[in-house]
Length: 472
Image (cartoon, rainbow, N blue to C red; front, side):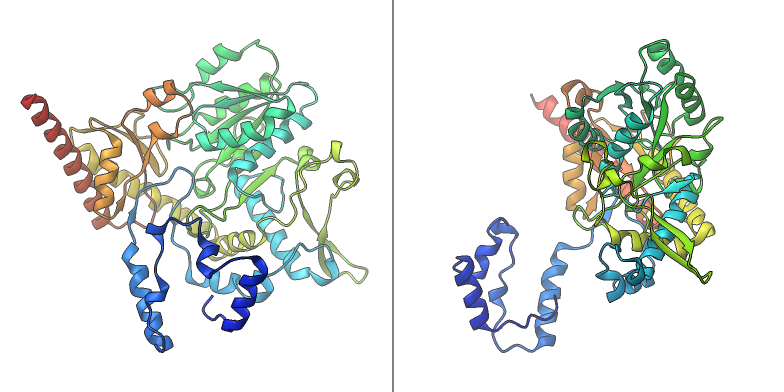
């Protein structure tokens, strides 16, 4: 907030009412070492001088070179996007229950739904979700409700799905009698082997759905067509958890296998939402027409009035949504409306060609970095190089030490996969594995700098370890 209108007396009265001694008491949860002493600014400074001093303090944090992903990605955001999205009519728009007063908001949501459905090659989308992780949980609930033929509350969940997503899904569905059966990935590819999946689950008890990530958490690409057809042959639905940028190049979920996936879900943060310390994010979910009444939250439809003029309104709101909670879908209403607006603008600004160029640039930059790292003997690619814009490297030195040294060079070097795992066996499988992400934002100079720095740090740590070993 650039201007605070409260007088000292008003601040004093506010503190008295809430029982605080000072403004600093309102921020007591922030560690002291992370605080900036605003009182150090002398009284009587001009606005211009204060702005300059605060800018200098904020610049101390720097702008590190980021090669971390794992579900949150750094992409270029057109300057016009947030200039338009933060206009008052978009920025403060509430849930559009009154269609006659909310045509602009409703149309934006309708365009969001249409674009997401088109990108996923699905029939219908809803008006967004809180984030990708809770979106996957909603897709699981949808599949259990919709797959009446299987009459099963069993979901096949690959270990190649993000550990965070799996934890969120488990938290939401475990008390509803739904079980998640984990599927191993191949240690040589980082993805599921369709033959192994068939051998493990063929003629087994029924399951409601199979989850297929594309690309998966390790950046590897799954055999989506074979897995989709197999799941349908077994009577299960197919839930896809996808990267929306990747879908502009890879086959869309609605076209997987003979009949396509049934539900597509994911995180839309790459579509115009900046990285901002953990949020806000926005999930998306789309499905085939036969499952439309199982979609949670809101759906906006387009119609015409008595004069033949087009208009928009909320539609397919079942009575159970409001009065029979035991049969209702999740009531996601005032969700990430502003984020959905930003995503709509991002897709509109870039269009099909722009999206494909962004995705292609991500792939090209990723391959360039992998080629540079391949020259080093201290870095290996345990899962191969068939990836979109993330890949795993195996180091011969501790990843935590490497990341600390990279941070000293103002580089966020990636994600330590060992720390992401939920059990010791999984942690051991990913010992010294580093997940690296590359997007269209990286220049050739930055790729070369990161490659040289990573290789030199690994070699330096390895040499130090060898010297210490010889001394002992």
